[in-house]
Image (tube, rainbow, N blue to C red):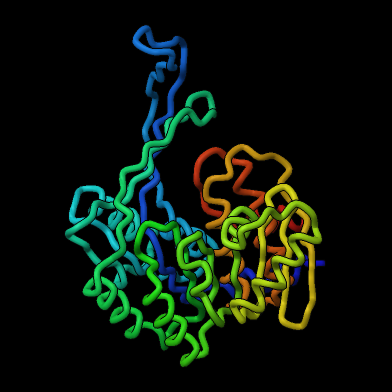
Length: 326
């Protein structure tokens, strides 16, 4: 049970914690409008645009959540040499995130996801991206920047969206570097390189990612328990946290402990970005001295807050405290 004083203590501890976020940077564009008729050209709705907005997405959204809670995120990833890359850098710098680890890759466009929203309903998403793996030269530039920063870091987050930045060589070298400097490492994985994350502090797949990688459905609590224990063993992780949507989270540790954290979502309007919020809050809490159980509870409440809003939004300290304490 988290008390008001303990939550306040942990939130105060988040201040200026330096957290590296390594992964796929992107812009989330939103086109907001209304639908009054169907197109005569095809049976699709005509969206009359009211406004357009841009937000940080992917690994950049993780950094945005960290910054919102008072942490000091440092981004590592790539942008293209294009107008969207310039715009992403502008958005990141405006949020106060450190950008020394962001590398320009001339061979690929900046990833942009455009969502069309009408009457608070998601109509369609358009992705502009390239998923090929980064080159050795780009990889080395990212590693060089990380080596220069690692001594000052409190934690490292891998935020993988399978866009080609988080390659196996990067994973192995970053974890080795973190272990040498006794830095917390947490992982929000995708299917590619799922089993490359050996010896990390927390491995946090969602249920679907765990099912795809283990090759079986996780229907019952017993199925999830078996999967969590298998992932602990195969990855030699300190903790595995499987997020399960409306069923909350299941936490597994090396001692054999299993804890179920019930969902806190009262209303679900949009799950976009919820995983980003979970890994950001979880990692920042651990860096601030929280136990794994405390960090999971904080992250669970944070997810419940952000899914109640349409569009990707970062968690705010006051909203997180209100969710927990009431």
